[in-house]
Image (cartoon, rainbow, N blue to C red; front, side, top):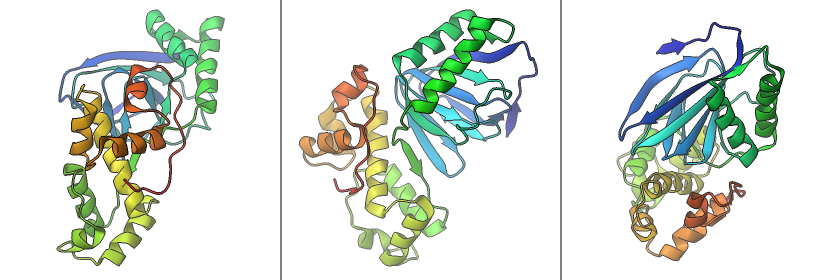
Length: 266
C-alpha cells in the first residue's frame, strides 16, 4: 500500500484534479492529510477497510488521514479532491462518510481548484478552508456505505448478491452451500454489518442501481437489474433511501439526502 504525503506547510488546503477513464482504478493508498473527494461527474467507488462507499455525481466522500483506501469508476468520472492540513481542526470528521455537497461547499471546492490550493499566509484563503469544514460539520451523511461481513460464510453470500443484485432468493435458499444456516447468517449480518440481512440487501441494490443510473441507463432496465419487477417499487425504494426520485437525484436539483427507512423491503 502506497502512502502519499504532503510536506509543505505553505498551504492549508491542497487540491488535485483527475478525469478518470472508464474502468480506471487507483490502487490502495493513504494520505497524511485528510481529504474530501468530490465527484463532479460520474460515480466513484471508494473501498476502505470493510466498507464500500459509492459517490455519485455532486456528492463527496470524506476520508480521514491514514485511512487506507482505493478508488475506482465503472464509467468515466471526474474527481476533485481537497487535502486539509492536519493542523486544521477536522477531529469531528474521524471516519469515512459520503455527504451531499451544498452549493456553498461546491463553490469552495471550485475556488480552491481555481487558486491551485488555499495558502496559509492568505487570510481569505485560510478562512475558506474553515468554511468547508463548517459545511461538512452540518451536512447530513448519505446512506451510501455498504459494510461487508468479515465471516467467510456471510462474505460469500454478500459477494454473490453484489455480483448478482437481481437475485431474489430468500436467505434460507442462499444459506444452502454457504456452510451456515440461515439463522447463523442472519446473526452474522446483524453483528458484523450493523444491518439486518434484508436491510443490507436493499443497500446493496441501491448501490448497484446508482452505478448504472450514473451511466445513463433507463430506470426500467436498472430496476430489473437490481431485482425489482415493478419500476414503481424500485422508485419507491430509491426515494425512501435518498429522499428523491432517481431523476431528481441525478439532475442535481436538490443536493439534500433523506433519512433511510429501516424496513429493507423491496
